[in-house]
Length: 252
Image 1 (cartoon, rainbow, N blue to C red):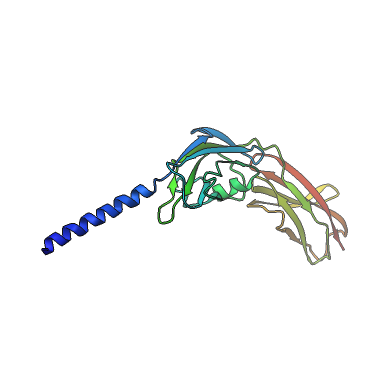
Image 2 (cartoon, rainbow, N blue to C red; image 1 turned 135 degrees about the horizontal axis):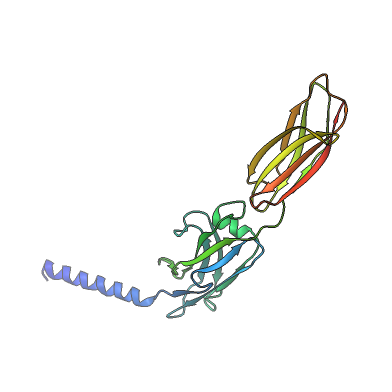
């Protein structure tokens, strides 16, 4: 047999093998059902959002499948994203076809923020199926949603701690802040008999109740009456909601 003849036979055998592998497994299809493209979802952590999809297999899988749901503000899903995954056995290869998102954690994960959105934004979602070893997962088309901020009527949470200081020392008034928007402008004041002696204002982003914030001021050695003063902190969030708390500062 000539060398040219041997090469032809090898090529034919390779093509036959590739055709057989393709016929052994046909990729499933993933169809997103709801919410429909262009639907609006309220991103306030109080409204649940339900997602549904369908997975169709041309033939029964011979190995367990893995189904992954993702939602993100990034259409490539390479940036911040929220993910849920389930493994399914061959008896029920499409065991994961819906989920309902609640609270704020999925919003934070999808947007890469610790606070809630203050403006409208676009969210994308998709479902992937890993269906056969050696084959790339199958992705659905991207679903598109209009994320709208909720109507925030909740004022920031504030706690101010009492303290004492000697004349000539530095008073450190500690306080805590929390708000679902994540951003709070805090205005701190020192009052004596209801009269404001000094004030300071600052905007904090990514506020967290576990953090301790400090309002401090120096007390002169003389010319300052001893006694009880008030330290008040008013917090205002991005939507104009505000609250104030006060505590006692004793100057000795």
